[in-house]
Length: 246
Image: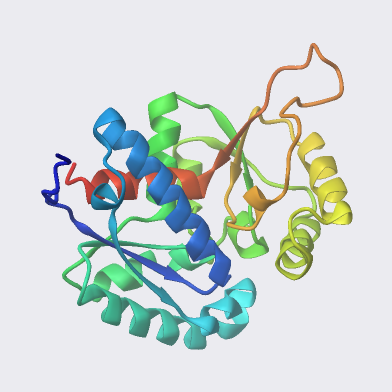
């Protein structure tokens, strides 16, 4: 007879809306990470994480965060307050919106935020990396006051695109046309080839939607391999850990 006893689990929250499919992507990656963590003892439905998700369309204004700061913050804070009533840990399915980590923590909610920047810094330190390339929306790669990755420069050398407007437009085009749009794929691959870092952080939920057939840093087979890290996957792995009470 199958064991039907439910495991004791922490409840996970996901805030999404920038874009709405980013929340589904994080949820799916959480399911994969959770199954991998439990391993051979995984029983299916009964061992899936307990998840609450809120999708707030106003969070889509984050692509122009400097212009819509107050409106975005009000929508994010309201959603976080509602989610906090039901979960133990939560994540925001948007790299850019993790800029608000200090403000969210200042709300002193009875819930812990798993931030994108924290998991990236942990990964960089764990792997002993000396240089990474950071790809994301313009406010992210500017590495200024609006970037949630400002502290990353304190632990590793950070390379950003020479033309942040080009990458910003690619992200917009993924939202509008999908990651497999031929123009999107061609421009993104060309951007990857322009980077010198061997490790590339995909710090935007749209970028992993673009197919990458090779991680070579050039067409030369002897070129060193380039590692692409989907930050959403790192967050999903940490949420799976928190879900299991680790």
